[in-house]
Image 1 (spheres, one colour):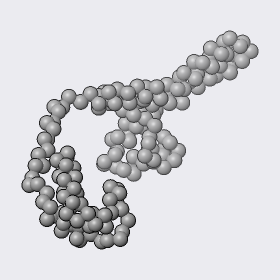
Image 2 (spheres, rainbow, N blue to C red):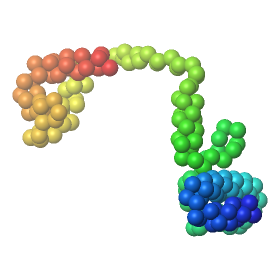
Image 3 (cartoon, rainbow, N blue to C red):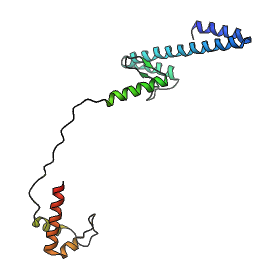
Image 4 (tube, rainbow, N blue to C red):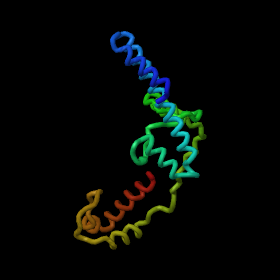
Length: 173
């Protein structure tokens, strides 16, 4: 509280009989109080920034003085682009909108998409036959709903069709 605000409060108290004058004085007192509070918060925040690295004890003392409690992750104020501290909620949301626009306005060049060339040697029937032999019989089917027992029962025809299917899937990649 400044002396000016205290004098304005005295004038307001004297104007209690006159409603219009009282309302006007009350409005002026509130505006001055809000302005003084914002200035005080700005100076405390600047002190906090100053003492951040050099004197953490004073920094935390200022934080407790502003908030009335220990420091937490969000301070409720934000710095504008020019370095001023913003406390007003509307101005904070405007600053966030500005920041997000800048963040997503990215002018980096696009990267070339790598072309996949997985063309390797074809899958051989012997490889499929060896893989089927390693598989356990009598087990449940997989996502393709084909059991090992069925492929084994079809003998060469089953191996030939399985090889053909797997080569087609490999080429699609």
